[in-house]
Amino acid sequence: MIKNPKVIVDLTHLTHNAKQVIGTCHDLGIDVAGVVKGATGAVGVARAFVNGGANQIASSRVEQLEAIKAAGFKEETMLLRVPMLSEIPDVVRWADITLNSELTVIEAQEEEAARQHRIQKIILMADMGDLREGYWDKDEMAEVALKIEKEMPHLQLIGVGTNLGCYGSVAATPEKLNELIDVAHKVEAKIGRKLQYISGGATSSYMRIMDGNLPKEINHLRIGEGILLARDFEVFYGYKNTGLYQDTFVLQAEIIEVKEKPSHPVGELAVDAFGHKPTYVDKGMRKKALLAIGKVDYGDTAELIPLEPGLEVLGASSDHTILDITECPRDLKVGDVVKFTINYATIVYLTNTENVQLEYIWDDELMSND
Ligand SMILES: *Cc1c(COP(=O)(O)O)cnc(C)c1O
Image (cartoon, rainbow, N blue to C red; front, side, top):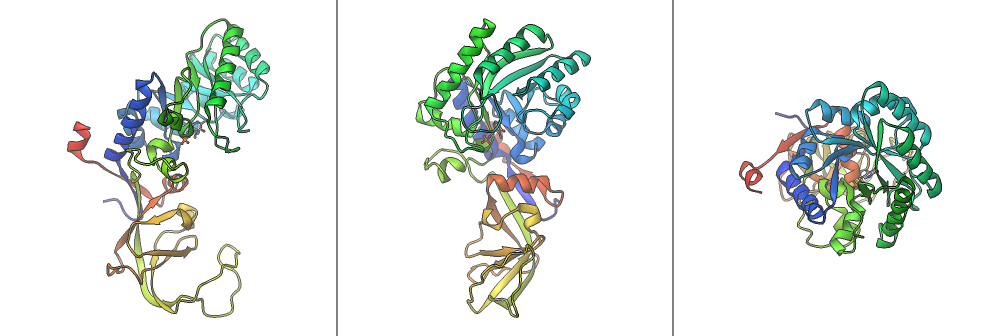
């Protein structure tokens, strides 16, 4: 028995999402790296991505790729965050593919790959305006590509890629992706051969497939959220009936106190546990419950979406969450558990803390037929 609080991962629904999204990509000749960083690289989650057809397993953290290798996966691993110069031995050991934007780092990878008798695959990142990682100067990028091609026998340049919608909230429009294709052509002209991959982004680029306007030459995507939670499509972009489950991750926490209490604090008000001065609505006496989970575990109460009818999250401190359960039809008692669906960012927090464990559930029959 896994103790509370816990996150329940529905592997049947997750595998369904992976099969649908990755299958749609494969039908169009697009390979998919399944991005597991959103669930802190959880091995069960990686397994669902692979069962869904993922061509690679990707994470921003090299430690998670090491865990994936240790778990015996045969798929290639991909490091999403451009490597730190100080982590190159681990990067070469655990990442089969890296995304790169600095020649110094690439040179260090070549040297280390030679030492480890490994060949490492490289995707050069182009910054198309989102202003996180990648080459702004595309001439410089093409020169680096040529250097890898001609002077670095332990590195294999397999493609170019870009990242959109992360810092600069720039949308993955067909125009942006066509600009990336132009960059790919520039690099191909420089090195005198075709590249294997033009890696056109993340979940936000998958929406171009849903719209039927993903430029043809994009043949690789790196997808996390759109499979793990599949909520952004509907919540932020208004796509309906995606056929994807949005309840793959559910948080369960336990009630440790139930009492009638005032809704407005009693006494002289100063600041809360975080130095803030919140306002409190006075609704008189209410039935309140305390949960044994807090901001340390999930970050922000606004990201918790109660599955219990009538339940309202009032606030939280580091280790306690305060609920108003006056309107709950169920007679909640100490020891009962309540459930929440959670947002993508919250899953990262919850899967990163030792206080919260993952419990995998699946439906044997559906898993074999799906
Ligand atoms: C996180 C990340 C992704 C996956 O993003 P999602 O929005 O979860 O699909 C893809 N590429 C890079 C470089 C990333 O850092």
